[in-house]
Image 1: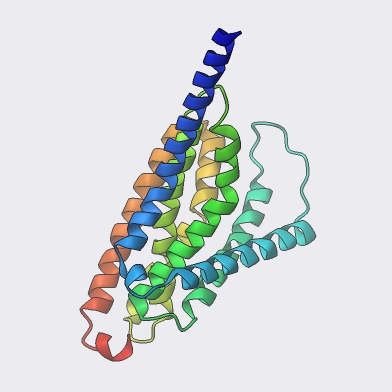
Image 2: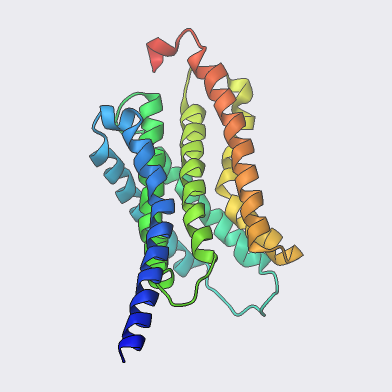
Length: 245
């Protein structure tokens, strides 16, 4: 009996350790970014919390619209539901509206607004979409890499939403060169529909989840690099920056 008790204790310790690793992988980047950026300097915790509240309201509106105007129907397993994915893509535009509402608040200058919107939005997403699966699944007896992947996706989501916030902010600026607006809008739509496009690729070509994760990382890095160059060249190097920012 003592042997069974010792084995159960070891299993419980290992599962709790696995959960702790997943939780640290998911949460620590948010904490590090908050502590080592302007968010701490300007005491932006409640502004981030407000952005998270707008995220939850936006998701509620998306669910209501999907349930009301886009009814679901049975699709054979392994088949592509193109109609359903297009409907989801249309509803994903609500996130752009929600982030725009956050950025329109009087919460500081441009770079601080972008950080508040991106961190608050992605943090709320992680708490509502990833914390419960980690708590239930990562503490299971059977080890699975999918929870490590889920935690890593939380980090990608953080970068993803900061990029989206930066693109929306540049799109709405009056002192940004209008000739680059088509590129800004294209990047914004690509980021908004990125996960749906990845799901389509996974279904159509039977791509593994690890490969999809790699594509997600590479595409986020690429769009992030382009967005950073736009932000530096069009905003930080603009002589009117100090006047309008």
